[in-house]
Image (cartoon, rainbow, N blue to C red; front, side, top):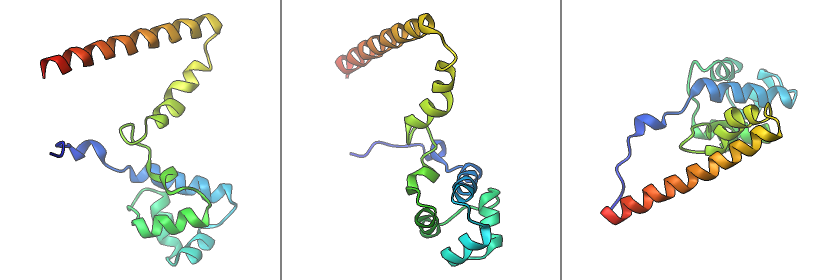
Length: 129
């Protein structure tokens, strides 16, 4: 039986996708016109995607990813439930970089504690089911 999922929690962020398209395009030193020509759309369409004004079709996003030499997940895997690594890289790692060695030891011990605690909760829940 399939698990029921609340897809309202899994919406794509068109603004973030657009920012990533713009960033990847500039990294490759391409203009909106060049990208549009390669992808078979108009520069206005690319501009609207980059500004988050419109969503992007899977086919067009695939073309963009090929042109800009990025994996397609680079553009869409921004949701914590889709890719926890995004949360680590964008939110947790910058904070850890501000810590000294002693603070990092404390954080490491706290994470160990949390993992044991969550594991115990999971075991108790499984026993109840």
